[in-house]
Amino acid sequence: MLKGLRTVAYPVTDIERAKRWYQDVLGKPPYFDQPFYVGFEVGGYELGLQPVEDGQGKGPGGEVAYWGVDDVAAAVARAVQLGATIQQAPQDVGEGIITATVIDPFGNPLGVIHNLHFAPPLVHAAADDLAQRAIVKEVRVAIAPDEVFALWSSSKGLASWWTEHSRIELRPGGFYELYFMLDEPPGRRGGEGCRVLSFLPGRMLSFSWNAPPHLPRTRTRHTWVVLEMLPDGDGCRLRLTQLGWPESEWDEPDSQWPETFAYFDDAWDRVFERFAAQHAG
Image (cartoon, rainbow, N blue to C red; front, side, top):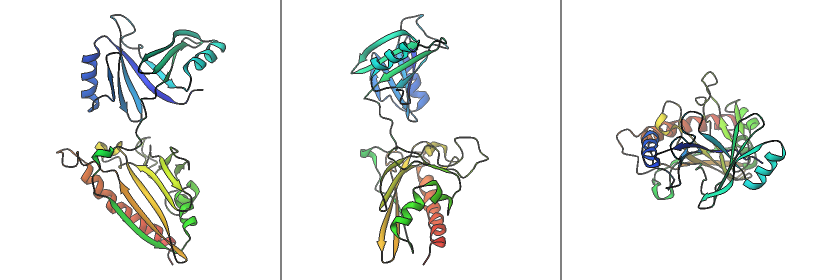
């Protein structure tokens, strides 16, 4: 069973030169760097470089998209049973990474991969690069914590007070996307790419969160938001904490992190004012 796109691998005859080139293009080093393979994490997917001899599969059309599977051999066997032919039999390409390629009945290459080394990050800042700063907001409303949780954790709930357009999947890793600018092209409509990180029904919800499109340097580098629903008499205190601001990049000349922080410091005030106005008591 295919679990989602994992890797697009490009054949290169000079892997060191290609590594340097893609590192400059992407602005960051590879997460996996071996003579037999170099891998970059790019927006939750992997861009891979595979060394080949001159004339072997390089140039336009030489790349192969690899889809994640739990069992490469079983995936290949299933594809062959359905009419595919094997182009590259399952093989360990190094450090336990298993790949294979088949040709579907229509002539297209289909790659499959099992790679436990690759886990795309849901948030940007690493544990050793977290700033002490955080955005914290709190408001009291006259409804119970369970009701507050429902209003933040479903598309129906959000439509009743904030935005009519969202995609919420209440499960770890599920979508938590809110759309505010539907006239814009995909990718510029709001909180696209955000995910549920964890939740305790009626008590807590956390999700990744991205910057608005006018801040492109931080747009794809998600922070995270924790919402706590705290019982308060016959109502609830709702506390929001936004974390994940990277310390090392804060003072760089072209950094947009301070601007992003200021934007959300103001934006969450307005969101909480709107929420409280509809559920005051």
